[in-house]
Length: 139
Image (cartoon, rainbow, N blue to C red; front, side, top):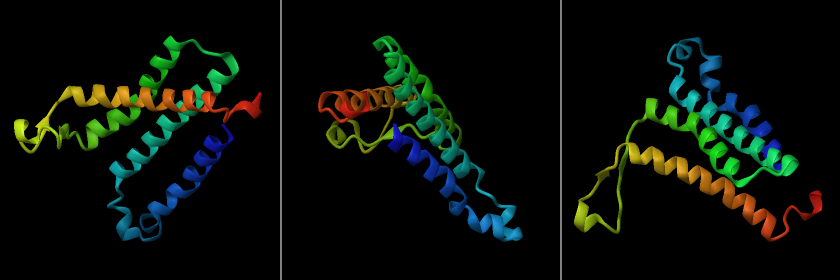
């Protein structure tokens, strides 16, 4: 939990440095990359929600049904910003290249897959921390 909080503080403090030329130079200020800024903020919002889920799980001992639903909801800001800014759902499956061609557009299934990946990652970290005793000293 402490590591997640330290990560968020560092990210919030260092985001302005990625856009420092736009703050200093008034000519460049007009061409501010709002899409990149929204990607940073959506990523941080998703990470905040995941850390909040970890905290709630430690304090309230959440049931597994909530551990599956909450990461899906937490990944929505990131998926929506990706849909608006990039929108590409084309993948390159190396194993299936000879059958399907060089690229494969999977459409809406891409967002379903990424949402499921967010659920997997948060729960895998939670299970791993409990199995090997990483969080044994916190109780």
